[in-house]
Length: 277
Image 1 (cartoon, rainbow, N blue to C red):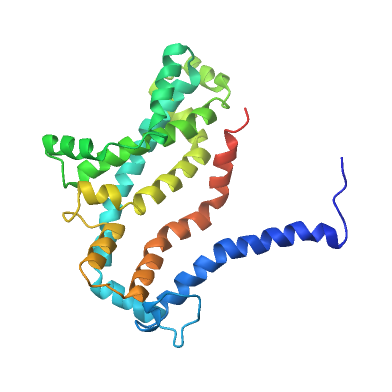
Image 2 (cartoon, rainbow, N blue to C red; image 1 turned 120 degrees about the vertical axis):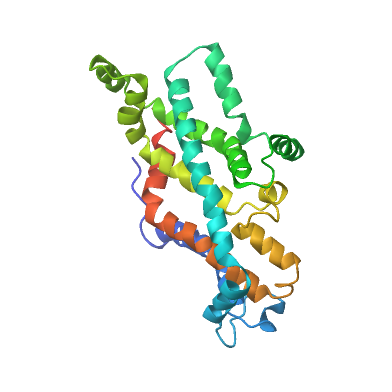
């Protein structure tokens, strides 16, 4: 085994990594904070200069009072929470079966199940189908779209993790008289917490920031945070008001940022747990 490099040369790599991270992450972060803290005239052309007079909290107040942010917040929760819960349960159940049973048929089913990761949804077909079902412009329709879109992500993450769980645990439960539903709820589901935490954060991130599909499915009939920002900006309320747009982006990102900071260890463990059997 090679000994780690010592002296000034051994410090070049970590210093270069830190500087690269600061450049890639720090510069955009500073741009958002600085622009959100400026007044309208200073923020007209967003740049990296510091504001003459910091007005971050004043801009936050303007966003809350004029941007209908609370309606968008509860609208985002209304579609995100059921979507994430439903896709985690259905996806983990499907992944349990796919991870435990072999054969060409189930291999084909698995390939079909994860195809949604690389194949984009057909937006026009989705909208027309929802209209036929009477779900266009409703939260139920939006929840169904999100569940269909991100089911592949859960199946992909969880199937590899299921294969690392010793089958003897399930066999012992079956010997004690447990049925499939009880084995899944009592044995499998608790063991899936790390990988489900990872999938939860990723899917929440996708849904929380989605404006494209929400615009076509529920545009104008249900407020979500990104859709609301798009609508008020297009209507002229935030036209040329970059300080308010960036302030809105900060407030919109805070819930997921706080969640990520708290759950980052579980997220990382979930990503790596199923990598090696």
